[in-house]
Length: 82
Image 1 (cartoon, rainbow, N blue to C red):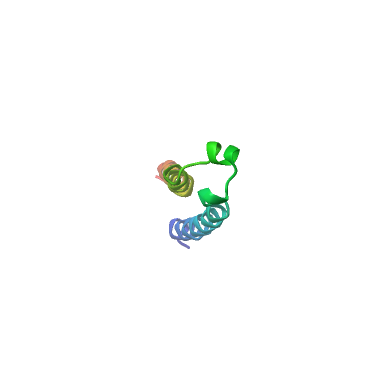
Image 2 (tube, helix red, strand yellow):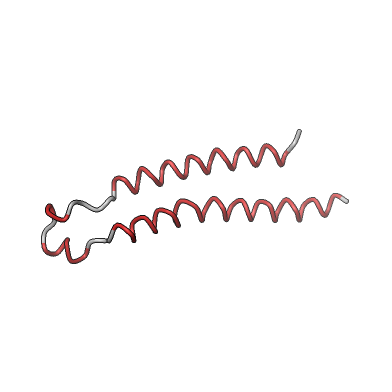
């Protein structure tokens, strides 16, 4: 059994699910057209750039961080086998 390949595939599946879920959440929260907003909503609305930036950071940082931590743990555990 190849544990590293299995964990990598598991990470790939969960990353794809995370990305899809995050995309759905961002579409639901997407800013409305300015004509439909009240004055208070218009003053507090998030710009499109800020929304896209939040999507990119929120969708990529958690899966990449898990990959890095998993690789570090795998590297540390493999050192004990020798």
